Amino acid sequence: MNDRREALELAARAKALVAQSAIAPALGDVVRALELAPELDALWAQFGEVIRFFNFREPLDRRLRSLLDRALGHPAVDPGDLARPITSLALSRQPDEVLREPLLPRLMRDAVIRDARLHELLAVARRRALEHCSLPLETLSAIAHQCFNTEYVLDETPAESERLATLRLEPADAYACALYAAYRPLHTLPAAEHLAQALASTPLASLAQRQIVEPLEERELAAGVASLGEAPDPVSAAVRAQYEENPYPRWLRTQTNFDAAPLATVVQELFPAAELAGVNRAATRILVAGCGTGQNAIVAARRFAAAKVLAVDLSRASLAYAMRKTRELAIANIDYRQADILALGSLGERFDLVEASGVLHHMADPLAGWAVLAKLVKPGGFMRIGLYSERGRRAIVHAREFIARHGFEATPSGIRRCRAAMLAATGDELLAAVVRNEDFYSLSGCRDLLFHVQEHRFRLPQIAAMIERLGLRFLGFEFPDSGITAARYRARFPGDRGLADLRNWDRYEEDNPGAFARMYQFWVRVPA
Image 1: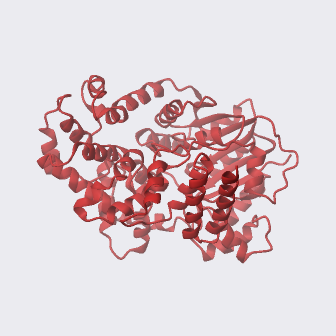
Image 2: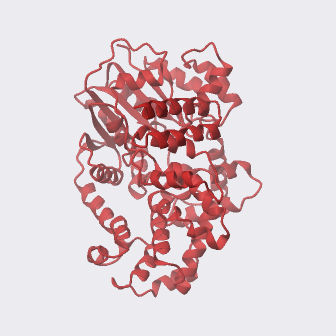
């Protein structure tokens, strides 16, 4: 019991240190806390949140290597948080030793690699394997997993295409199957189901599961999604078409273990100064509007105690992906439906929480969509909204202008050519910022980031005006940086005890334009 208490004290101190940008001592505290109480999921989640800031070199402390190894398989850790530390560790080796980093194959299976240098090494290794069959099967299989995760975003030469066309594929030839899977998804082959059965008892079983069984399951699920209605809106139709072709994000694993708490408790922890009188503390009914491939819906289902979630999206392909992942995780409190937000006004129920993160800015009229959703919230209920920042997206705007000048199209080949041109554009700091974005490293991510058919961006005065027009009350922002931005804002505006003055936040963002580079993620409340 004393160990557990000490571990929680260390975790609390680490949280405060991170908010002060003292990341190295914070990591030391989290490591010590995990040594004392490794059974606590919250400590593993905190480990992922802190370790993601680090680059490492060989030789790595044995304790850290062991924790990274365990974190790769822990349900409280998003493996994407481990991409930077493991990638940097691998790249600290000699070029011909990079792929021998023991942690790298597991990362390549369960996340998207977010490093241009490592992507280039994977492209070279894949090409050499096709020419000379020179890689260990385990390494080639990991590369095939990564290529599938990125939807084959790596460049492919005409010579590779020609050689691949002559590749003889037999279920008994695991190496040839892995080679093909590094260039094309296995489910596109004739008799793919028979191939999956043949590979089920081989070292390529996980590859067959990911590339054949799961896509075929999604195809079946998509056909059976029930609809709540569509709106005759051409922008909605174009957005739906994009996500039918490229469901986004194509995540493999995410943080799914939470210490579930009532909605009111979670909101109070996020915004301690908020007045929450009259909040319903019973069962929580949640609507996730624009749920995409299910990450937000799954987090909501696990984050809030006694939650029942309705998750809707335009794209049946995205919903099928979400449904498969929900089934895989044995989550029973989410219902998925196909719907346009503009058609939700006829829903015969109200919700304690409505989430719309990353969706309203893709509508023809974001305020109209927000208004429909606001009417679906119970009196005294909450909304969690995510909108793009004009200042935060300046690198993306610059990149879209670059794309328009060069005429790159939103096709797989056009996206690959665009990526190559941006990687070659030395001296352009804004394009360099785009290349560092995690979405740059997958086909669906890059399309969503740079080629979206519809995008609105906002400044905080605009958002404040919309909140006022809808009769809502702003509670505050939710940040992904473990409290760093909030601490810096508090130091500049100590009089804003609730961190909820949007005029001050506008001044802060003017001086820190990258503060909302992802988006504005904030909560509002409907008057009781």
